[in-house]
Image 1 (cartoon, rainbow, N blue to C red):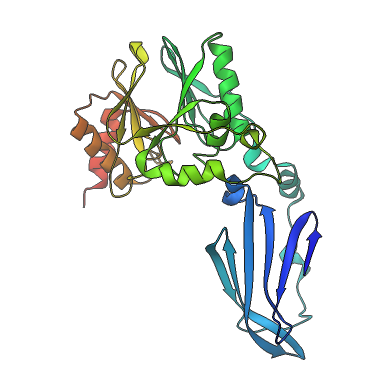
Image 2: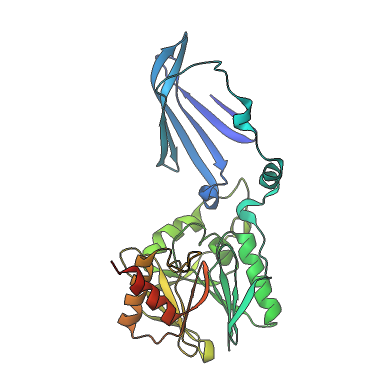
Length: 327
């Protein structure tokens, strides 16, 4: 049985013997982290049917998204028309209004929190940071997070700051889903995108994922990606803002790479450095692995910054690593 419900295509698979629904299939655009996959095929299986108060009800539900197990739920007891306190569902009106009007992952880029780390190196702070890097032959965008709309805003700001300079590359340093939210936009623009070798299979699937329900830039302007694979040290550009990329290869950081500025001794540490409110490290192990990679590559670092952290003196970061290891 097939129909559309609120513009969502639905198929109900009925069991030929007992006439109960075995599963329900839909194709939807989700707004959790599956947002980046566009048209998601969801299949919900119903199992372990039992009789409750004259009604046959499935006590097991197993959900798949794009063929992968998403979640399962089990009802241990089923009661109908149970009295519920309405206060349990009361929501603050201001919070409810914000939720309704929130753009979700399609939030716009805002350039109001900018920090100049070196001449031609502009860090834009936000929930996920992006950095605009001016080199003699063009602009490098460090990170394309959140969404295509956000990354489009980053590129527009880069062109405002450096009129006439072409965008020559985008660096996407990790595989975390909000970190790669703008990669499809970068591919649609024809930008070369530097990615870690381990992340290639994932990102190939991301750029090939259909987006027909809510077409994005790549769905409207299909292109083949120009991947630049980082499997060892890779040099990007020249001049005072030339870059060196290094895979981290740590136990907790294996899907991330570093971006190093030799002339200014700046180090971008992907998604590893975050300081807590008390100044301690959010995750000392991540930074320990960064320090290992820095020693391995013999890098001279003065300042470190990251996806969720503004500039921090390297000496301070090392001291925090040491402090975290004390008994």
